[in-house]
Image (cartoon, rainbow, N blue to C red; front, side, top):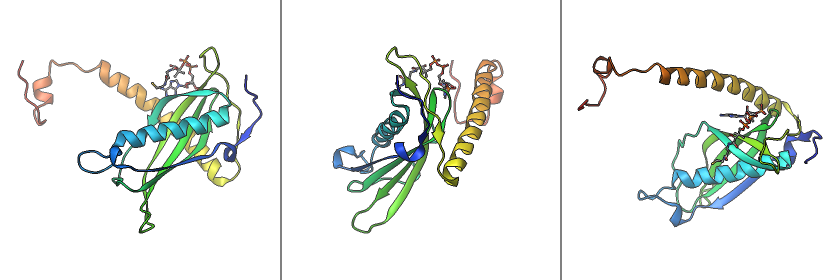
Amino acid sequence: MADLLPRPVSVSQTTITELMIPSYANFGGKIHGGILLSLMDKVAYACASKHAGTYCVTVSVDKVEFLQPVEVGELVSLLASVNYVGRTSLVVGIRVEAQNVKTGIVKHTNSSYFTMVAKGDDNKPVVVPPLVLENDEHIKRFLEAMRMKDIKEKVREEMDDAKSTVDVVHAATLLKDQRCIIQR
Ligand SMILES: CC(C)(COP(=O)(O)OP(=O)(O)OC[C@H]1O[C@@H](n2cnc3c(N)ncnc32)[C@H](O)[C@@H]1OP(=O)(O)O)[C@@H](O)C(=O)NCCC(=O)NCCS
């Protein structure tokens, strides 16, 4: 079992930089979102497992919005940092940037949050070391993550409720202004 001595944020901070090659592109010539998601999952794993000292799994992914397209030939850097630790879970914040090497222009394409859980050899969740917050930015991120966790919990409950209370009896009225046609 890994030791539970507190670990500073800086110890597990991880950056991956990868060249965007033509086989990563979609038919429109831009990089597939799935390629970026896969890189984000890798860097989240590297960062979380460095902190936990164990194998980690991805449990949920928040705030994935690709606001700017990434082009073939750009260098994509993924900067990952543990923002929060619970008992067995960790939230890894990932900033994704794409750099055009010729112009030097760096685009911030997205910032996302991966919740990971540390696992033991028996595949059960294991307790992770506390996090040492080394500056105000680390403190701010930890507090933000706590707030986001609460909001997510409320949204999850509301979504479960919304699903269980949907009925199709009044569908014709409810769907009146929607762009769909009922043909049953
Ligand atoms: C997620 C998983 C570890 C939960 O296992 P469990 O036995 O139910 O464990 P617990 O209920 O004790 O939850 C463990 C931690 O996960 C967190 N967690 C569980 N579900 C969560 C969710 N939907 N979102 C965020 N965190 C979640 C819990 O809050 C808890 O965190 P904490 O210890 O810091 O408080 C388990 O369902 C699993 O292994 N899922 C598969 C993950 C995987 O394979 N991912 C790869 C993608 S295919």
